[in-house]
Length: 568
Image (tube, rainbow, N blue to C red):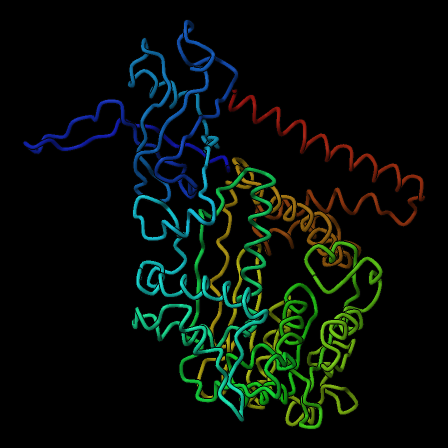
């Protein structure tokens, strides 16, 4: 749990039936420092962090009461909530504790309270799926998750599928071109469609797609399975309770050619995606020229997904995947770029990705490049020249890590009327944008809002987040090793051709008194040591003295001054 800076605590107030505002006994309202957002929810327990080790509770309290805790009652907004004391001494009144908190507490954080969870066995859960007293289903869709008839039909389909595979030894088959398969009738009979006709629409959809492999769903459930394993091993997070039921049957709507004709009843050679998209659309996908730019974390996922749906496998129809990435694999890449292994470290990412894709699906035609895509790659001799953009590619899939490259790709797609899919991540967040020529806005049509700046006074005097210290360090580095050397170069000629008095007048006229004094002080420190007759040893000694003095100033003198001005 994160530590949140506390502004103040006050007694909660409420209006009685006569409209008179009164304090609510035992309830408090907590306000965060301006700009801070808490992470608490109703029912959470919080504790305070104190400015010193002084015991703010009465001296005769027990050890369990020394850690004052509150129970969150109601969250008003991201920076304010109402709570009540869950542990305090009987001898302390609420107003006394509030006064002590305001005087001595500077922050608070959530407390992780251990919680015992119990689960039903699979057979018990299946018997109680309609029992409102049991939490059998975790909500995953605000519409479908609470549609009980639909939920029962899907659960019945899964139970029937388990029985069908147990009896037949295979998944239900799609329609055979010469003879209608009996699998659908058998499945419907086992599911009880005759007794419950309302099941028929969902059961029919379910059985027709029983052999389908839909990569997005597979990826989601693979990630969920990994998360649940980590939860079980660590015991730190709440696991999914009993069943998580999710479907996206809306992808089946609007597709006319859904039937997949198999040459044999148990022939599984057809790609699983055909049972969802249909034969015609799947063939079109396999015939497209797809340009994947980048094979990092997102690029690896894209290539894995494309290989699993047979993209780039109809070579005679022009189907292929073109991949470019000028980067090489480092050890740190292996944790998030799933196509690479230890033996690939040092190789070009595009080359290692080609090897991995061939292992996944040898029929994929993958053309790899290690060149950069940008303004300097548009020459006639380049692989990505005008001819490539006009006729050599159908769809572009971006897996880039910078805005400049994205804007270039977007400009080429707009100029050549090509479809583009752009994806990006930032921490746990992700973004996808689909650009369709003449039907949607391009990537460059909108600009993200600027990042909120950090006030200078916060950076210099009261930094309270890690990002503040990082920004402070960046500003300091830029000033010492970019701005000041540039300043010396700017005034070097003027200094060598004018007297100190003339130079002072130039600075005063150009910058004003206060800024001129600051620049003169910095130039005196930066220029005088670099005299033409200065030996290397003298320069080395001066540099070391400068570094030591700066370190003492920043990390000792400044801290001593701050503690003197704001004692703990």
